[in-house]
Image (cartoon, rainbow, N blue to C red; front, side, top):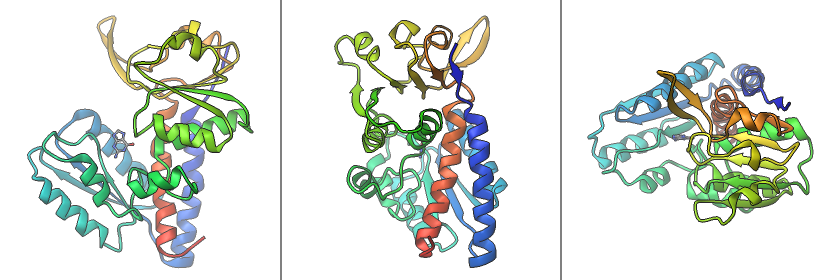
Length: 288
Ligand code: GUN
C-alpha cells in the first residue's frame, strides 16, 4: 500500500506561509502583491480555475484583479489589455488563462506579458532561465510536483525519473526541474517505443498526458513515487467523476507513494501560482 501524498494539506501549508510573508510585506514595505487573471471565453473548466484562483489570492491577503473577455475578443484588444497591466504598479503578476480561442496567437500573447510579471513561467525569458541559471519563474504545476517529491523523498539525486508527456506547460519544465535536482530524466511521448518497460525503470514516474487511467499499476516499479498530473472528467455509473492519467486503484498497491486525483497536484498548482506572484512582487521592489 502506497503512501498517499496529500496535495491539499501541502497546499494549505504553503498558503499559510504565504499569508505570513504577505503580512510582512504590507507591514514593512507597504506592498500588497497583486495578481491579474485574464480569461477569454466561457470554457467551463477555465471558469472554475479562475474562480478558485481569485478566492485563494484574496485569502492570503493579496489583491486579485479579474478580466473576463468574450470569446470573440480581437487579439489586438487582448494585447492592449496586457500592455495596460504591464504598466500598472498594483499588478505584480499577470496570468492569461490557456487555452485561448483559435483566432488568437497564443505564443504572441504569452510573450507580450512582461517576463517580470509572468507568473506562469511561460515567457521565453523564463523558459530560457529555467534551462540555464534556474533563476526565472517556474511553471506552477511542475513546481508543485517538485515540492511534493522533495517533501516525500528528500534528496532526488541519482533517481531515474520518467515523465510521460512533453507539453510546454508540464512535461518539458518538469524535466528541467528534475534534471536540476540531479535525476536521470527521460521524457516519453506518443511515439515512445515500449512505454511499459520504460515506465518500469522509473523511481519517479510523472504522468502528464491528459488521458484517463492511461498508466496501469503493471507499469509501475515496486516502491516508485507516482505523480499524477492528469485531471480528466469521465462518466462512470451514470455520474461524472474526476480521474487522473494513472489507474489509481492498480497503481496504489505497487507504488511507494502516489498523488490522488483530486487532492494531489491540483491544489499545489494554485498555491504555487500565489507563491510566484509574491516572488515577482518582491523582485519588482528589490526585496529579498
Ligand atoms: N490552463 C491550464 N493550466 C494552465 C496554467 O498553468 N496556466 C495558464 N495560464 N493557463 C492554464
